[in-house]
Image 1 (cartoon, rainbow over the protein chains, first blue to last red):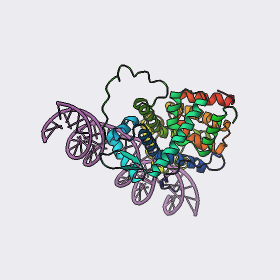
Image 2 (image 1 turned 60 degrees about the horizontal axis):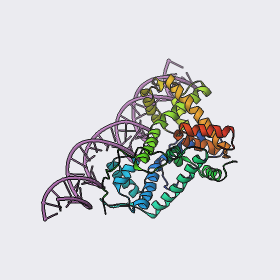
Image 3 (image 1 turned 180 degrees about the vertical axis):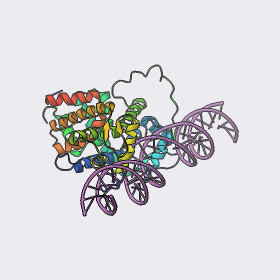
Image 4 (image 1 turned 135 degrees about the horizontal axis):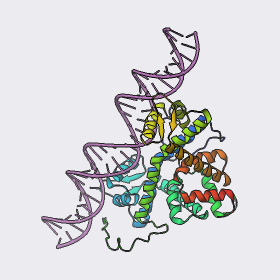
Length: 161
Length: 161
DNA sequence: TTATAAAGTTAGCTTTGGCTAAGTATTGTT
DNA sequence: AACAATACTTAGCCAAAGCTAACTTTATAA
């Protein structure tokens, strides 16, 4: 039972599924590991997506606004911004607005698109917008490339698989 | 730049009708809070569901097997079982097998059903089983009652909402 | 029955992501 | 220019969930 070290590659938005749908310990463990890995990038994804939104809306992203939108305290934002900065996703000088690096912008764009696809898919299924937005927030981080493609194609012609 | 003014104007009287998918700070924060809450129950749900599986398969659930299936170390399982015990979901004496309380059984059953609904839904969308199982593992914890119902009804008649 | 292997636990470390309290910086008002 | 309000940071706390190393208990096999 060798334990894997974290090894977070920030570009791993798309989870890889193993072949075959067996229920052996191995593949089940891989699935759980994959979910744990996804959780590690969620914070980053939520922040960069929100920062991008704020820049579009207000021309800048202030920590106080990030805190308010995420429903967390300002010190939490400060701490997480330091992490995002460490990981090369944002640019942030003390007491200044927050900006996205190129990598951060790229990540934000991917997240934005994925979010829209998931929301539109749920709405196409007949789910009302407020709930679609709510569920998408949790679901979007766990959708594989294949599933995302299926969501998108369904939304475009909501009749057949 | 301009540090934003509080904007106290009409908050308490007017803005109560935030139905629909608005992007106000309030509702967005609620969604994020909800996702954070869901994360807190994921560990419990995964464990309880797996323990139920193991009991069906082997007549008992041994920590070593839980560790293997989840892909975590044995000490991690020991620690998490203590939390589940604290929360009234499992019964566990040192060096013994793990059992579910009535509450644990109920939770496991809900999770099992939900898991099947999500997997079957994804398969009905045309996603192959291994990927469906993979994505379901992450998605299932974030699906609202309404969305789950929509998934189920779609699976039964995969034509239209 | 005793030695060894496997299972399980304990202790102690790490990172994440939350919080409050208190201090510092910036901005806005007078 | 001084002061008040707001924004931001720092310090220090907490719990969750992971790990390794080392120890104890249980099970197996000679």
